[in-house]
Structures are given as C-alpha cells and as structure tokens.
Amino acid sequence: MAGEKKKDNRTVCTMVGNAIRSLCQMIVLVHEGTFACDIIDHNEEMSNLGRPERYEDFRDDLYIHLHPQDREQFLTFSDPAHLVRELSVKLFTMYQCRIRHQNGRYYWSEITVCNAQEEDSSKGNDFLFLIRDIHKWKKKELRQEAEQRAMLGALRDEYDRLFEENMRDEQTGCYNRKGMNYYTDLVLEDARRNGKHLFVCVSDLNGLKHLNDTYGHAAGDEAIAAVSSELLKAAPTGSHIVRTGGDEFLLMAALDPDSREPEEMGPKLDRGIAAYNQANPRPFTVGASYGWVFLPLRDDMTDLDEYIEMADARMYEMRAERDQYRRD
Image (cartoon, rainbow, N blue to C red):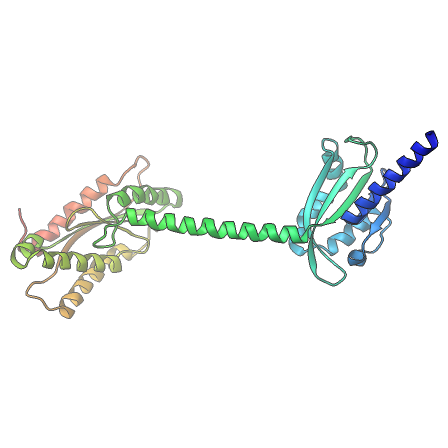
C-alpha cells in the first residue's frame, strides 16, 4: 500500500508538472546563492531567448527581447535585491510585459516569480520564473480600456460643453456672471502663480436707450452683438469677456508685465467698430466707450472689484466725450 501511495504521489506530481508546463512558455529556476539557472521548460516560440546558465545572463537576454517601453520597469522588477525584498513578504510577484518571439513580433506575457523552497512560504531565495502567454487576454483588456477611455472622453467633452454653455450668454457668446465668478478665480491664480499683471477693462455701448427708443430693440440687439463681436476680436490673448448687464461688458486677463496688448486693445476696438459701421450702413451709428487698468496683483486680492471700479471710472470719462445720448 505504501508503494502504491508513493507511486500515486509521483503520478500526481507529474500531472501537476505537465499542467504547469502546458500553461507556461518558459520556466526557469534560479538557485539561491549561486544564481545559477536551470531551464525547466522552454517553448519553441521563445527559443530566441537561448538557454542561459546564469541569472544575470538570463536577465540580460530577456531585457534585450522586451519591448523598449517595458525595459526600464523590468530592470527594477528583476533586480535580485528587489526580488528578495518582495518575496520576503509575498508568496509571489508579477510583471506584465511584451516579449519578442522567434518570429520577431512582440506578444504580451506575464512573468510570475515565486520562492521554490517551501510550500506556501515566503522564505528562501530560490526563484522560480514562470512566463505565461496572456496576449489574447491582454489585447482584449487594452481594447476595453481604450473603449472606456473613449467613452469617458466623450462624457468629459459633453460635460465641458454643457459647463461652458451654462456660463455663456446666449445672445453674445460672452460669459455670464457665473462665468465671471469662475474665471475670476482662474485669472487671479494665474497672476499669482506666474508673476503676471491683471488686465481689467469695462465697456458700455453708447446710446443704447436711444437706439431702443428710436429704432426698436432689434437695433439695440444688433448693436450689442456688433460691439461684443469686436471686443472678442480686440481683447488681449487669453482674455475672458463677460456680459455683466444689458450693454455692459467686462474683460479680464492675467498678462505678462511687459505686454503691449492692453494699450493696443482700444485702437483695435475702435477700428473694428468703425469698419462694422462702414460695412453695415444704418440710420444709427454703433459705438462703445471703455476704460481699462493693467496693474500688479496685490497679495491680499481675492476679487477684481477695486480694479473694476477704477476701469469703470475711466470708462465714464470716455463716455462723457463719446456718448451724446448719455444719461447723467
């Protein structure tokens, strides 16, 4: 009976060994201390790896046949000192990578390294390398991940679109007051982080009430659309333009201290509005007044209110000169 039991155990071990071999492309035993290698199994598709007798040769040979993007992480994973540390607290450690086969193509494999001294133990430094083919599974996983990324990207784009839409004025395309609150914080942070100055501009249409009362609200809407369009064209790079009221606009941006764009904006806006009036003859003339400041950020600033007041005062000075229909 003892002989039969022993024979049965040998049979089971053989069956287990055959099963492991059928699952693995390559099995390598690295001996403790000497780091000599025993190639236990070696499938034909990986015969280009050779049959190294030393661990350092096995490691170098495998490194050469890895996909370039997987090599750096493999060096850390396969470092003997790293494996000793890992297997002192784990039963096994794993790494997924692409290995070049005999046919010259790369295939996904999973390298599992475990101790080979005691069953269910993390003791010892004999390493057993099991290299398993996971190419089909990995490709499927990567396709699923790509599909999920695409789906998340589409959802993110839709969220961004709705987010922007919620912060924009439908008539002019400029930001509304929600947008003003959101982008004020971003402008202040940009200036604070990058040593920039704050550009703040306030602009009003000239004679909007007169246009509405004399030519109808359609004329007023046309003038608002024209001025907002020209503001968008003339504004300094990176400006956020807010429609704060019926015919009132606010421009804000964080700009390099030596930027010339603030000074250039006014003439650009005037030329743009003049060109609009020339191209669209009407019984009325579209016009706008504006005032701006370009000043450093102060340490205690949490909003733009003070700079808005300064720009607003300068806008009213221009309006007194340009708007013949102004209401004092």
